[in-house]
Length: 68
Image (cartoon, rainbow, N blue to C red; front, side):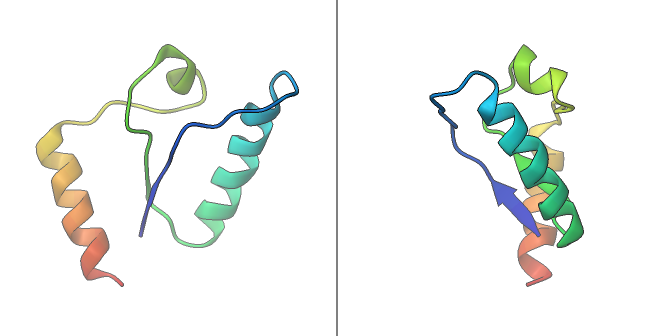
């Protein structure tokens, strides 16, 4: 399965980082193998994100949709 994320906003500094870390843990526990961050940034990279080639991304999307 795949999770497609959106931007996160918070009123408290670093709250979105904490929420993202907790969310990733929950997603992993529930079989999510790919989180689409949409835009590669240094901030997301610092949290463990990595860029993948479009062809690989599309393969993952196809495989994820077949597993449901």
